[in-house]
Image (cartoon, rainbow, N blue to C red; front, side, top):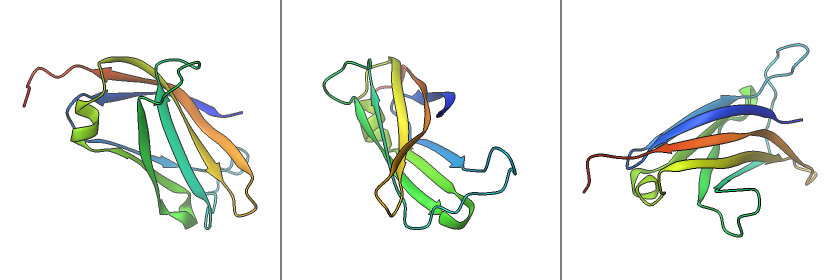
Length: 113
């Protein structure tokens, strides 16, 4: 089962979130060399289109570190409100696992371009 979290994005600002994967039993870092990572956010489970594809990079495969990222141009185009998201990893054998899910709240920006 995926871990649950709540994230916040400031509309019009750069969003970065770093995740470190570790074993639930031993608390040891998980090596994710050769894996790929994807993440999307949507208004609801039934939304046909993603509100954003969150850029995910494995920043340190040996320690299981993943960075989620959206630049300010992308966050400017997301309407303020609550969204659902998940993050999935795919191993070298093409087995996909959802490791993180939850709610992203986009807070409105006062300063406009």
